[in-house]
Amino acid sequence: MLRTLTIAGVMALAVTTACQSTSTSAPSSSSGEAITVFAAASLKSAFTEIAGQYKTDNPGSSVEFSFAGSSDLVTQLTQGATADVFASADTRNMDKAAKAGLLAGNPVNFATNTLTIAVAPGNPKGITSFRDLTKPGVSVVVCAPPVPCGGATQKVEQSTGVTLAPVSEESSVTDVLNKVTTGQADAGVVYVTDAAGAGDKVTAVSFPEAAQAVNTYPIAVLKQSKHSAAAQRFVDLVTGEAGQKALAKAGFAKP
Image (cartoon, rainbow, N blue to C red):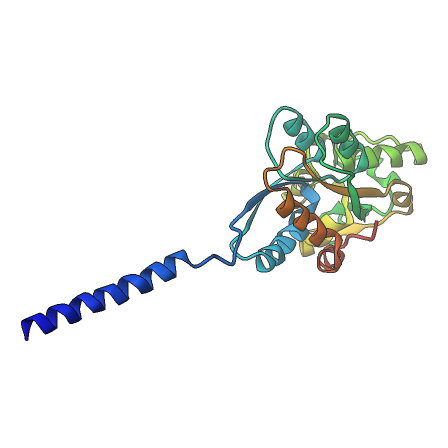
C-alpha cells in the first residue's frame, strides 16, 4: 500500500513539474520593449492618448516621454541624451537634429498648430487683437525665440510691425500658459491646442495674423534607438488614422 502511494505521489509531482515547465517556457505574446519619446511640450495631451493606443496595440510595451521646448530637446539630444523618437513643434529644430546626424531617416510631418492669445477667463483686459498686447497695463508672456512658439510669435511681430515687450520669455509654451492661468501675466501667446486644453481656465482670443506663422510638426526615429522597429511603430501610429484622430481632438490641424 505504501509503495502504491509513493509511486502515485511521484507521478503527481512529475505531472505538476511538467505543467509548470510548459507554463514558464510558453512564448510571451508581448515584446516588452520600452521606448523613449522626446516631444514638444504642446503634444503632451495628444501623445499621452496615443501612447495608450500604442500599448494596447503592443501588449507589454511602454512609452516614456520627455516633454519640453523643442529647442531644449535638441540640445539634450546633441549633448548625449538617449531617446528613440523625436517630435518637434517646428521644422527648424528637426533640421538641427538632422544636421547633427541624429535621425535614422527622413522626418514625417504629422500636424500643424496656430497661435492664439490666452487671457484670464472673461478677458478682463479687453484684449481683442495682437496689437492690444502692447496696451499700457497689460503684462504679456511669450516663448523665447529659439522655441517654436517664440519663433512663430516673432514672425507675427515682423508681419504686423508690432513689437511686444514681454515681462518674460519662457522655454516652453506650457510655461507661458501657466503664467496666465496662475495670474502672473494678463496674456500669453500660445498655441490654439494649449488654450483649448486649458478649458475654462483661460479665454482664447484669436487674431488673423496668426495664419502667417503656422508651425508644422515633424517626427522621426532617432539613429541611436535600440528599439528602432518599436520606435517606427509609434511613428506610424502618430501619422496613421488613430494618431491623427487624437491630434485633431486636441485641436491640431493636418500638416
